[in-house]
Image 1 (cartoon, rainbow, N blue to C red):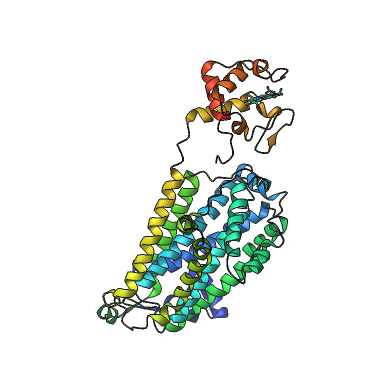
Image 2: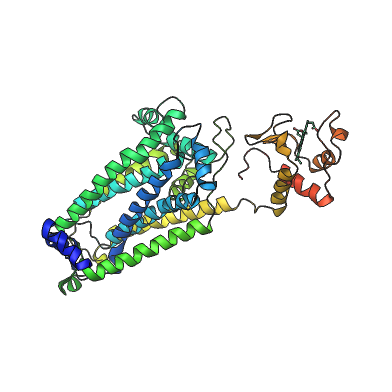
Length: 443
Ligand code: HEC
């Protein structure tokens, strides 16, 4: 049946030569698990396109609706949480696989003549990927999105000469707002995809013109080659499936955060950037005074310049790692620095004291007793009574709250806040929760 169908199409479209080109590309030295990173990245990119298209069905890129539509996707749309999770974790996985892909190419010296162009297009693809990450982060329009983007744009603004222009260009106005969101959306779903598809096509075109590099070990390479089909196709497929399983597991096991709705007036919010920007963020903490701006723009500029120039700077034709000690030492030095900084950064992030379970029980009590019918907390609730978002700033005293809950009038004469039927444990839980409502707290 399938064979006859194929015959039917083949007799009209002449598919055989196409099949030859697609599947019979020779790989010097044979198929290898070392060569799976590129195709796994391509697979993840496809997954991003698909999940992104599905998210666009409900997402509305306006400051009035972005947050609510993301909430709606997360909580109401059938399978919406899964698609959003795939898109979120997929984005991280792309960065990780691009990193592995580049490391493999770096250690094997595959960027050397005649593959310089492929490397350069690859570096451009990396910057486009980071662009996707940066523009995508703003789209949910929650506190983290808003303030992390604010920090990011300020960092770009630190660049001399072009800084001002870039800031205005990214923001679309004097402040981060509706115009920024629309243009980040346009960049994320139209401009970057168009550019990256051209880039990927070019990357693959060059690959087919110069051929895969094969192993750095000449003796191994001479052993003869093997076609792309079937073994490399098999290895690539296994890894793609594995990547999909991992991304799905992350989606299922880890609940995706969505912070409070973006509040441009709340300058106390401390944003956390994506993990792949964390090492740079950490580095900036160590840069004293005047060196700060320099570390902000000069280091990334130097880093990308070094990447672009690598094939021209390192022209020693030997690809064997043993014959390239300096290049590899520089590469290793960079990697170690990145991971050490990332480690410090994560350690500081998680040094935030573990959440006391009493706080969650207290939060539950506020729902049970309908505190928000009168009080507003982080943008939600009534306005019959004081806004509690930062109540612990003005009332840090536990005893005061306990007394207040027992009998509001005793500490606040004339109060119409009701006395709720709370036992001692509940009084404590509720107070523990109320004391977390202070500026700079992240939850
Ligand atoms: C019927 C409306 C109403 C409800 C429901 C209500 N409160 Fe109040 N609350 C008030 C009013 C009015 C005040 C201001 C007077 C006072 O301090 O008692 C107040 C004050 C407070 C304060 C002190 C605020 C400040 O700025 O000093 C806290 C804390 C507080 N409420 C917590 C709660 C919690 C927790 C709940 C739910 C268990 C709750 N309230 C439910 C009306 C209400």
